[in-house]
Image 1 (cartoon, rainbow, N blue to C red):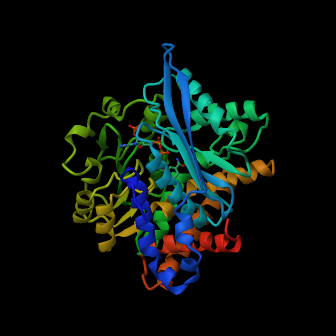
Image 2 (cartoon, rainbow, N blue to C red):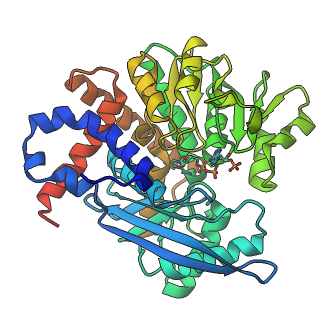
Image 3 (tube, rainbow, N blue to C red):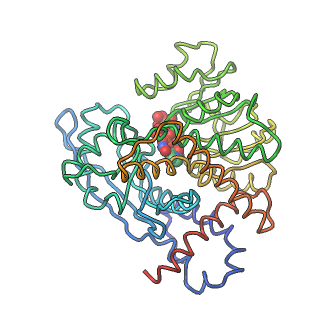
Length: 439
Ligand code: NDP
């Protein structure tokens, strides 16, 4: 295969998956004969578009928009939209590729997709965010639909952005469809969707640690990020008796020995869209390390004595040196709220250790699973209670854990959840592709 240096994140994600598929490809020659891998790594459709918008000074700004409709073997394309200046074709492609397997693991009828723009929401006014979202949707609306492609949020896209995106879709399509998930509770959203990725990640960690006769109660936890996934990971950790002692944003890391003040983080991040450094104005006893002072080749957030680590910010945010530090400090497990948070070297170091490791495509699948529950509620014009949705989420996470650990056992690699997740997800998608013929 020819490679292109501009797709490094995509190749990293593909390599992680292909490495663990060897045993199933050996066992079942049909996948090779039918070129399933070559078909899987090629998106069904990629859309790139111009997003022009006016800033508050009346100046024209232009961003790049993307939607990758990667694989629809199991259902409509499903996956979030990311608005972040680092977004490019490689990042959207790696996220879309991961999404195929993650969605398959949920056991729900959803294919894989992803999208976004290299737009930076930081420092933008509400009116600028709205104008950007409206322009973005003015192109995207012709490619999506409740049975074709159903985007959701991701980094930089929360309830506010989804509201502006949905409003513009509705206006252009003249239809009140369940075409986006993560909608506001008053206009078609589902209970628990906001909390789902973080809650699901902690449920997953709980099953993973129970298998090693450990419980979350009393555990000290390092969490990175302070966005949607990090906040609801911390909330569920507290509910289960664990204590998050760190969180971070792209400017720095907070360490608070007494436990992170979650109400304060919610206020700073969800309401005020502030920097985390402001945490110190309320808690001078906590410590803040600005990004410039991070250790060489690593991140401060992983440099404390903790029992469990929850990377919940972004890709490649944990280095090999960070892993070495976590292992030296006696860390027992890592559950990934973020997508591909480990660098390649960190991933190899984890694979060679005996630490419990829940890869993102399994541990953070609760978000997309609950998105599918939102689609089901929209399609049937029903509304389930918080408890009903939470119960289903818990069950999905339990099934994922059970399925992938049984697959790992079956292939002679007990507790290797990477191999278990990749083979389980691959088999579901590959079999559907074979049954649907050469399309
Ligand atoms: P948010 O935008 O709500 O929060 C992202 C957090 O990560 C912020 O604290 C942000 O800090 C930090 N961050 C983002 N980029 C960087 C960077 N380059 N370096 C350091 N810190 C960074 O996003 P989410 O919480 O929704 O997403 C977090 C992760 O979880 C992503 O990997 C996403 O793909 C994954 N995920 C999300 C799901 C969801 O349902 N939302 C579902 C499954 C996975 P700052 O504010 O300073 O940028």
